[in-house]
Length: 388
Image 1 (cartoon, rainbow, N blue to C red):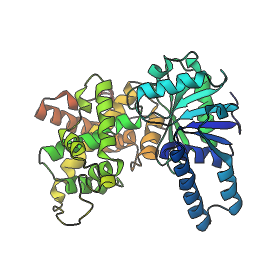
Image 2 (spheres, rainbow, N blue to C red):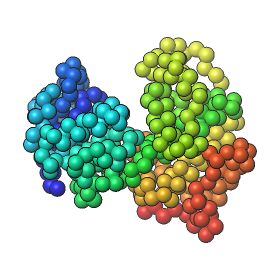
Image 3 (cartoon, helix red, strand yellow):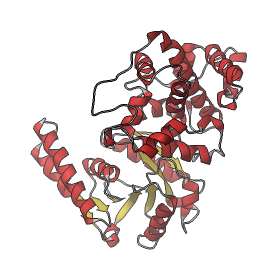
Image 4 (tube, rainbow, N blue to C red):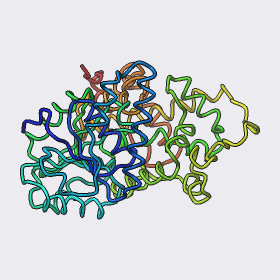
C-alpha cells in the first residue's frame, strides 16, 4: 500500500501519541490526533507549541516550519474525522481489552483498506488481531519515548498480518527518519525482552547484598552504559518497569529468567516510583546518605549483568525473534547500549559468556541462568555471531 504523504490518524493524545503526531507532521503528513478527553488535546497542543518554540529559539526550526507543523495536526474528539486516513496508529493505555475495543470501533468507522497499528510495548498483537474482521491489515508499530528523539521503531506483524504491509511500514519508518526493525510477536518483542536482565539481575545482586545500588550503577556506567539500572528504573518509573516485567513473566508462562523482584514490588507499593514521585531507589529531595562505591565489585557486577544480556539476545536470535542485525540495532538505538550484545559476545568470547552463565547456574541451581543453545553450538564450532 502506497502511503506517500497521506493523512495519518493517531488515537491518544498523551506523550507518546503526541510525539508520534509530531514525527508524522514533520515528515509532511496531515495528522488527525484523536482523544476523548478535551483536556488531553489541549495539553498536547501546549506541549508541541512549547517544543516548537524551543526549536525555533535554537535555530533548528524556521518560523515557516513552526507554523507548518502546528497547522498539520488537527486535534479532535470525533472519530469521523479519521475518514481519509491511510494509516491509523493507536497509542493509548496498555490494556488489552481497551485496545481491542478501540480497534473494533475503528473497523466500524474507517474504510477496509486503512492500515491499523498499535503502539503496544508488550501486549499480544495476534490476540488483538484475532478480534478483528480484517486482521490482515493490522500490525504493531512500537515507538520509544520521546518519539521525536528516539530513532528505533519495532515493526511487529501479528500472525494474521499481510507480509506486504510489514514492508510498507518499514519503508514508511525509513521515510520518517526512523530505524525500523522487524520483530516476531512474542512477549516484550525485542527491547523489552532482551533488556530484562539489565534490571532483573541488578535487583538480584542488590537483593543479595553483593553490591549497593551506587556500586551497581557505577559498574555499568563504567562499561559504557549512559545510566545504571537503578538510575534508569527511577527515570522510567518503577511502576512502569515493574508492570512490563510482570507482563513478560506471565506471558512466558512464568519462566524464571523474567521473574519480577519483590524489592521493586515493595517500591511500587510504597509509592516510591522514581523521579516523578521524588523518591525511588534514590531520594531526589536530598543529596545526603549516598553509600560509597566499591570498585572492587565492578567486574563481578558487570559480568553477571552483561552475560545475562548477551544470553537473552542470543536466545532471541536462536528463536528467530529477529535477525542478528535488527537485534543489534534495537539495543543500540532503542535503549542506547554502548554496543550490540551479539558483537559484545564476539569481543568477550563466547566461551567467557558460557563460563559466567555456567558458574552462576552451578552456584544457584536455577534455570534462570541456563545458557541459550546457540552459545553452546557456537562455542563447540569455535564460531562467532555473524552480524553484518
